[in-house]
Amino acid sequence: MAVTWLAVGKLVLANLDTIVGVAKPLFTRKRADSPPTEADLVGQQIAELQAASSGNAERIRDLAAQLKQVVTALDEAALAAAREREKARRLAIAAIALAVLALVAVIVLVVRG
Image (cartoon, rainbow, N blue to C red):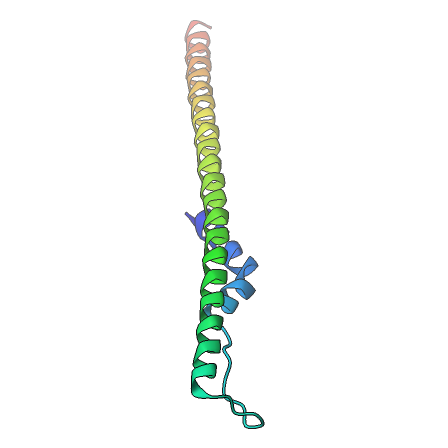
């Protein structure tokens, strides 16, 4: 479980500048030196908003692809860990069985001798 949060944390930190850029777009504001008409300003702001929305959609698609890669890697790591755990369990059972067999052999030899 800790591996999952670690991977998500690394993903977020690696893309923090992108996330901040998506969350806080800068738009045209009125300037005191050359005041454009309200219609021009609104039109320009709408165009910038549309461009920011398109950029956000592309970034979200990229982040989704990266997240898919992370989830796939986590699934593969979980399967590998499960295989290793099963292998270790089988080895432990074999070691216990061998130890019990050795203990029985020692008891038999002590009782006979």
